[in-house]
Image 1: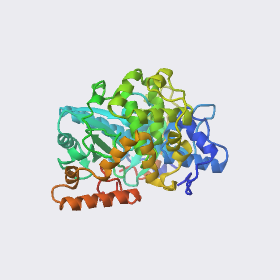
Image 2 (image 1 turned 90 degrees about the vertical axis):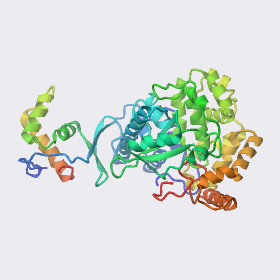
Image 3 (image 1 turned 180 degrees about the vertical axis):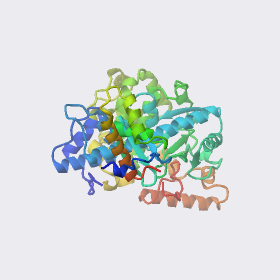
Image 4 (image 1 turned 180 degrees about the horizontal axis):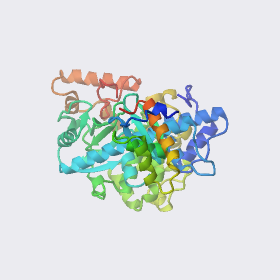
Length: 400
Length: 95
């Protein structure tokens, strides 16, 4: 893949600066002139799914990118995003007709609430929907009736040990994967996906008719998700999302309160500090004051959230997932919080393991060893996470 | 592309499984068989929408001339229609 620093080095200064400007909403009008730099920049934009954002937001007298290396992937990304939006709209309509409440968030939510005016700007891998008002199994049934197919068979036990469930849009054209991720909880601030509260705080000030979270809740989720994703691959598009959402945040005190409720104050501050220092984006003074974003980031925040390192593909980062896990730990909270989280991951409760494994698998010890085996394989980069929705088992279609 | 390759006597009919969408100011066709994405100009997009199996090339050209505010001469539009249909056929997008 172009732009990869396979030896774990940062991208060139030119490429890093270009990506910084795109993320910060100051999209350069044209690509660098040099062939090598242009190739590197395009590789990074594609790798981090920022090509559409650059093309849509770029300004200046240049008549615009027309080369096949820009236009082709950009149109492809925008076409896929359009199908994801259509699937999300259909799923939301079906869920409402089924008597459930539903909100969209992250990419689809940001497009639908107008943070991205042109949907082509935001690459959409899937549609994230948050539901409530009935058992998760009911929502799955509604979506199945609306033409969505579960990735794995639904098991009612999942509701207790996982926060989400993925379904493919069976009406999508052949060759295009369109996925809806159905969430009933959003524990992005936690390592392990379990029963961490019902998420009522996210619904409290949501625009239920419009199907959107409040900007404050959305900003918090984006920051939590960004930190969580460090252990997989830095989700840089999430930083771009946050930069564009922050001007919509009107109530910093509400954001502060939400962060406190979800024990995410520290990650929120760290991500805002990253936006300010790594991207050069001015934070609203009220927001910075209410959230108590320090004027200077700590060394561990700089280590965990440095743009050059985050731009590197995960495969090129020497410590890979472990490094991301450490980065997440550095930002997560106090050492006590971290140790508590770690203990929950390494030694989850027996009933959680039983629900995860299903009713037909062997004894408790066997389940626990199986879980540890999966955990080690994840750390070595050999399988999906045993803790994340739809990565918990090896997927026969290879999607995990 | 010549008119002969566009099968002028035929009634071009779009394949039902081909997906037509507007994408950020462009019009695209997605062919699920080949998984190719075809970007269309505005004229080709208008022609595609007329490929319903009931209109021949002349009828499509007449329809476009009627729809355009400042339409060029019929012959010019007819040539564009023939070219677009020939391209659709060459790409396997028609029945």
